[in-house]
Image (cartoon, rainbow, N blue to C red; front, side, top):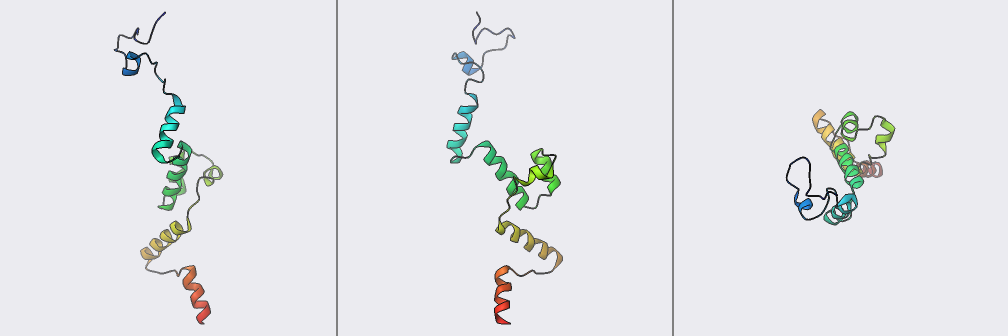
Length: 116
């Protein structure tokens, strides 16, 4: 019978192996719990979703997002993208600034409609 420290490769045992633990003893469950504790309850899917959403809000193209996520179907990618209204307005303001034009906000349009 062989133990964790009895390795045929000749390499020294890892720290966990030296203490009687096998590689991977922490397991994905422990890693998920530690991630949740460190992030206030987020899991890997939440982080992925957040990264893709923020990248989209920051102006990443659909091709960029497909490359980042590994999705090959645009419909699958759409479930991850839920841009905020604030993000959309910010992007449109940047586009307006680049082209030297200005697009009024919904509030500004409503105000104009009541004064005319």
